[in-house]
Amino acid sequence: MNTVGEILKLKRKEKAMSLDYVCSELKISSDIIKKIESDKLFDKEYMVYYIGHLRAYSKLLNLDSSEIISTFRLQTKKNNNNDINQIAKPKFFSTYKYKKIIPIFTSVFVFTCFYLFFIRENHQKTEYALIPDLPEIYDPVIEQASLDQLPNKNTEETKNKFLKENFTNSSAIASNTNEQKQIPNTVTLKLLKPTWLQLRDKSENIIISKLMNEDEEYTYNLELNYTITSGNAGNILVIINDEVRGKVGNFGEVVDSLILDYSFNN
Image (cartoon, rainbow, N blue to C red; front, top):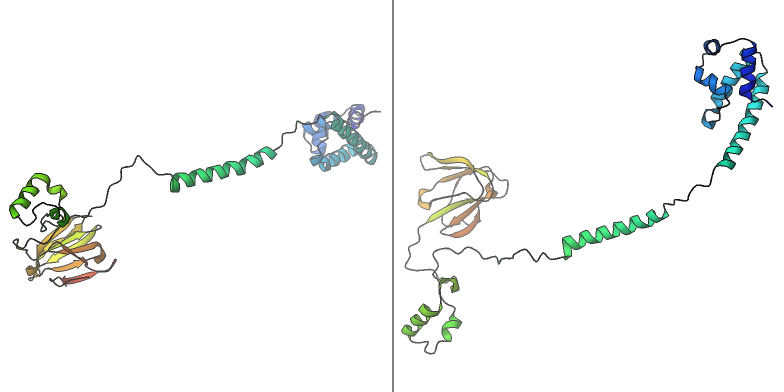
């Protein structure tokens, strides 16, 4: 039994029609006509278009289009069954293993990150004790407990000898204020973050007016009564006679013509 392609090809040759003529009449590309005559139209997704082309081609050759299409369907069905029988069983490459591996890998990754960031201690990092800076107005003295252990604690000469032989400045701690030192009434403005600062004297002369950098300081005598103007008062730390009294104002607050005195405490 002749196939649809063979029937159409023989009929075209009987009518002495060339491929170019058929293509121009049907407005179909020559590749499609060649596939029709070679019986290579078996793609299911284009089956509707193939049937339309066969119907038009059959009418051009004066053939029964219904019979041609029926034959084409039977031929296509038979070829599809043969293809199914000829297809070898695919090698089973399941993704089940990967579906098991992905959660395991994710769990290990999360646990490792948690351990590195929150549990494991970095022993290579040197740790230092936080010791505050001590004002220079304090004198170093020895702990009273060490003095009490002297054999003759009431003898001033023995104490001085013991201090000279056994202690250095590194073993001293902050003690009482040296009463012999005279403390000037000075104020130091220390910048915690870059902030614009302006100082003016009593005659409204500008002493300083610029953008101060972080950790930059400016010291003056309280008796000068300088007025302070700042764009962010919360970034300016006030230190009076080496004693931290607080900040000029709140964070983000703009102050204008503020005068500090010894009683300032914020």
